[in-house]
Image (cartoon, rainbow, N blue to C red; front, side):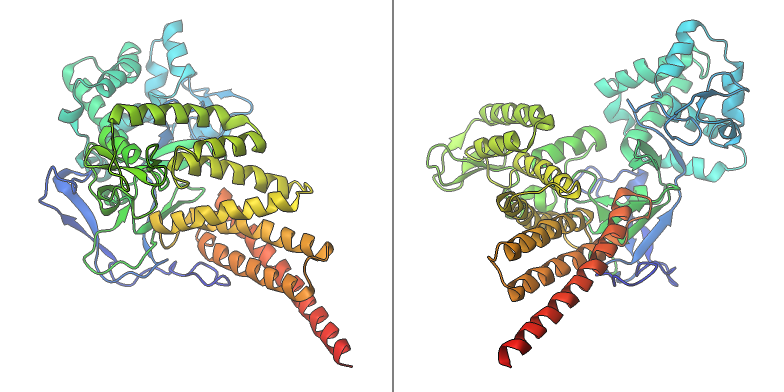
Length: 517
């Protein structure tokens, strides 16, 4: 764990010896299939401690996601007052200064200026930015003579061309990106040019990382070294991206020399079928990690349903067969999927309702799903967000709601510890969230004479331990990110809490001295 007083965070020192090597795995087509050609992956060159920096890498390129909101084509910030580039008369920028930003200036601007556009073409290029990142990459591949090596490495990344050919995603890219660029004359209409465009789109889909702009707009970025990390649904790394889009990869757990360096391409609180579906459709491999191979998901039961027959067992998916672990009753896969679909609709419909309706929905679904089911956890996280906002807004919350807030955090934490062990952003946020109702409830109990100063002190020290652990996890977050700003809040809250603890200790000592006089 990190020392909360260290600055910079521990592990930030530049390692003296190589910390990882690039290995080649001959197990092609199995669960070990990698995103890069020849199944290359990163392995530890020596033992690595939790929190230690494995690599820091600037992106080769960054750009908008598919279906992303319009942003400045140079710096990717939201556009408050649009400024059209005076050179190409096409690129929407946030300011005149962005005209000279190398993201847009140069060959890209020149090619856009040369394009002869109809009104329909102009509307295509300015109404969506799906075309921008693939086009920008193709410009660099064909015209960037000063930086050939990184773009040659980009073309070596896995695109899964044959697995994608003539599939829905292949046709989607052809219709929404490639034909649009061909129609406006920005890329050629020959087969070779289209094949290159499909390869670029494939590499982006398989290898890009989702990152956030300083204004929290979701973007995509290519990181050549980080893209060679293996997948595992219980990873051993922590990834953070700063305001300049530099990615820092740290060990979240001890990594022994020779072990693969891995991260979870999916979400830690998603169920097995959801994770596998994402990997199958987006990364083109089947995951058979320890978590995926265990129907109970390491005892978390994130995908388990309550058995309607015996009412005490849980239905798990064992080798494509849903069966109660207690009474042995088997259930049709289509029926299970229907139940999940209906419940998912309920959860999505409840995205904008207040806490009473969410609590009611949680109780209803509790008769069908394990309390740790991923749909239940989604509702619990939503409730925690509502309760945290109520606390931060200074609402006078009842003891019952504060206790409920504590219960939700305590239900979530053991699951996080299992599916995202070690250095965990989600655990840090949850611990910070938990300390708030612990302090407020202790204050209420003292005010209502339900607790004495010794009991109050005990609760404050409990909150102090929660905050200290939260800060030890959040201290690795870049300063300008929401998590980084939460770390600053946690540090200040810890300082104030320790001052309060000292005051209460003085009161306890004073009270004790008076009692013995």
